[in-house]
Image 1 (cartoon, rainbow, N blue to C red):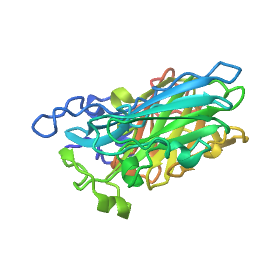
Image 2 (image 1 turned 45 degrees about the vertical axis):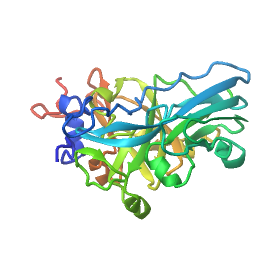
Image 3 (image 1 turned 135 degrees about the vertical axis):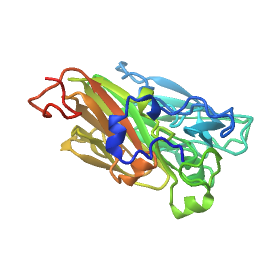
Amino acid sequence: MKLIALLTGVAALALAATAPGVVLAQEADAAEAPAAAVDIVRRATDLPAPLTASSPRHHVVNLETTEVIGQLADGTSYTYWTYNNRVPGPFIRVRVGDTVQVNMANNENSTMMHNVDFHAVTGPGGGGEATHAMPGEHKSFSFKALKPGLYVYHCAEPMVASHISNGMYGLILVEPEGGLPEVDHEFYVMQGELYTEEDLGTEGLLTESVERLLDERPTYYVMNGAFKALTGERALQAEVGDTARIYFGVGGPNKISSFHVIGEIFDQVYQDASLVSEPIQDVQTVLVAPGGATVVDLTFEVPGNYVMVDHALSRAERGAAGIITVTGPANAEIFDVPPGTPEHQGH
């Protein structure tokens, strides 16, 4: 088994977060994985800026459904089904009262019918009924964003669980009137599951296991599509004193996530992604259902590597872990380690 992590524990992941070995290889070994494997990981910073318009707007969202061989881990690939060649799909940002036109094209090279169901939509199938598309077909519909919140969208073609597991999910943010309080950083993170015939750590091109899917026994838990994808060069970056907001969703299709950042406490949590309810404060771990989302705000007071996990912690060994790297001056009043230990901050 050559997957780097099965790193004997989450602490080892944090200590090694900036080491080259933690980064998922950009090119798979041609002898062990198809040369065509591509990077499907959605960067956590790949999301649009907060909206500034004060009156309702019309948005056009273009989605292409594709089936691509993507890199799951070092030496390991998988045939993902995607929106716009990344997992998760694009982060869509609108404001309550806006109208949204969704144009969905199923790539002509696809082997399956695909569609898109938005949990933010009031209408049949969340748009899914309007977007059933065979390979090569284009479908469209429009909707008005009636309710603020952070909502999941996903493919809803049978078998729905298979389409979701293979990567067809994303988030749409419907901002409340006036938007959300300003923060220094915004990040986009989604957790999902992959079910393969092959065991964890097998190299080469893996295949989907419908039996494991129906039994709800994931081989991999992923954040943003791949095994420990948000580490190394893809780790989230911040500085001491910065505030950050994480838009976190669970594509699933089956497992609840116990979202937690080791060494941090969420300042505010918009519970169940309700943006008009009063946020709760000082929270350690947040439960997020499959097909659900949350919004958490936090402030970084101390430098170091902070590990994002599903606190069902064996899942970290199967890939559900990411890193937030915080740089800047030490703060001994908040956190201090005696000299001579690896964590000593140099004062």
